Length: 446
Image (cartoon, rainbow, N blue to C red; front, side):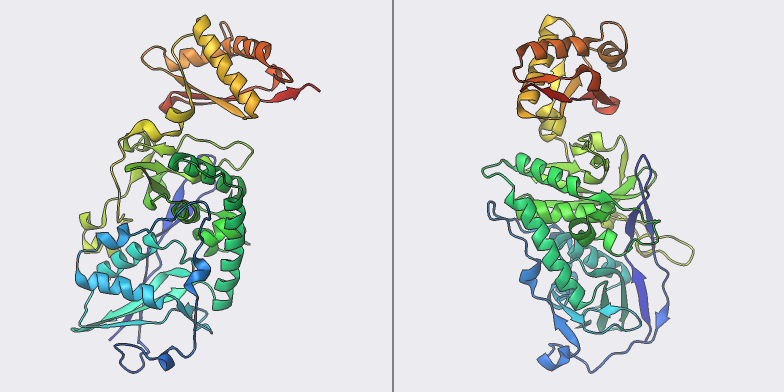
């Protein structure tokens, strides 16, 4: 029997102005297994050399809102053997070796008698488990296995020692509690999502994986995102899962292509309607957060993302890859997102249909509200049925009537104690969504 070492596909985001991800798959190599006495139900002495991680240490409840269980990964499994493997992973993933072997900390191995799974099925089960358990941040992407006619042996690895897991869990809890402690009560699901998104991207920075000092394991995990506050798309997605699910919002990650490379983002469920959320692409790593990828429909997402196929749409060769063929990235669960009511701009942008007095007054009124609330931006949806986008943007900011300055003047006439500075106005434009973001700066009168 040979032990085959394989790896799940993981994402590594390239630090470019447009953002993107690239994927890597480790090569496989056969090893002779080192298996102890046959086991069906391990006894306490079988766990000698392993330390048990207390699962409550990676439970991050929010006092204000009831959490939601993530189970779409388990629900996607199709056979009793796959479900048994999933449950055993959840039973043994908490036991991590106290000492590394060949530089790697191991999880207590699974020996499943009467349960023979293919390599593709093991990819499927492990992907389903990790999608449901973002808080299990220590699992490495590599796993080893071998099978006989009547059993499957599976060896998972930990990227951290037990001490490292405990230390990171404590730091993560402290940082998550800081986010939750400032969270208002009685928020709708949408407003909870918006608060958590903003609080997270304000803290986290996009990791430069080419930096020699970057820990490549951590940046792919919720630890990188919520302890180091430095992560790539996979870390962002898993962190959002932890935060949102703790506050009652069901969320999973979705894999695909963004900027011509592997990428990962989230799906979120708001009152039975699903949306796509890409916190990575919303984080510009400066003072301004973008909302171009906040709660998109499938149609909107596909303007600059490609969704990877579902597991069951691929062959075993496509899932596992080989010496001459790269494994195909796959998804476990991808809902149809066809309701635009939960998109950020549908909730927050003012619709602009013209630049007559009524139109200018409406924009000015929104600016007044923003100034009184200390908001840094207003969002203008250029109605495509009434205006041509480029012409409207030109009329607002670059030529013609310079309508934006008339709006500011009208707003300032209505404001007391604060004025919008005309010399500090800046904009960003998203033609795909017909939205112009107007960033405001204020001068306060004392």
